[in-house]
Image 1 (cartoon, one colour):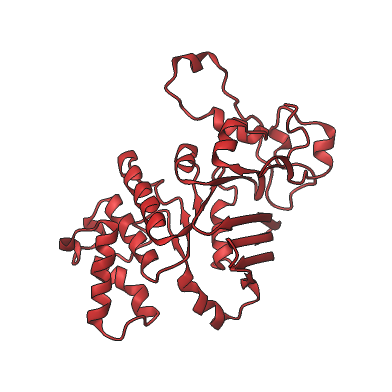
Image 2 (image 1 turned 180 degrees about the horizontal axis):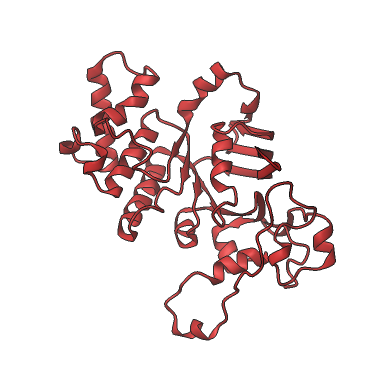
Length: 319
């Protein structure tokens, strides 16, 4: 059995807009090994969530390939894809808007079990619901509660329980803690890591919070305007960033160190490139302090700058 669970090749997702095509995801290659977490970071609007949805075929990709256990699922028929979906789940960003306010906690967690006809009797379904509530840390007394009666942390635990209900192998975590208080964020992150250890789950963890992604991820991919600009292990990326965009993101992390007050922060200046019918060249070039004429001529390809460390910058290692 291959150690790689998820792999994409040249994955693209374009959206038709009045003045052309918006390149939300443009030629992304990634690989996630079983039981590991790939963190995806970048500014809002860089294509992180679209990437996750394209892998799950919630957004139908424009081009490229998505492999699940070495099979290209973009070639699957609708019926074959329906059979695969229990193995691939998603935890949404906003736990309040992603839950039906008319349904109780028990009904919300039971919904995927009913839709997929996992059990024949209601008794079996509700036994499974009780088990899931215990796994994610929801008290039994909340069974008949409605989402509006719960805080953000408990609502997100419902989302986690729904994702776990069908025993998936792969979960897209789409900014699952960005709408939560810091203390609650830590609880959900620790819960996800415990579940990964217990059930051997594989995560694509999407966030714009670099401190969070460092804590949970094995590897990290940095996205900018629909493309991957750097990919490395978590430790390598934080200790040796090579792309100017990655360096700017890391320098913006607040660190309680009095000596760092004397170090300048890399401020990203300039205008964001228009994602509609983007021009040739590096998409970060208009905001890059190291931009040259060559950067404007053709888009740099990912190249190796170390073991498992890829970057899309022609000047990587010299800046």
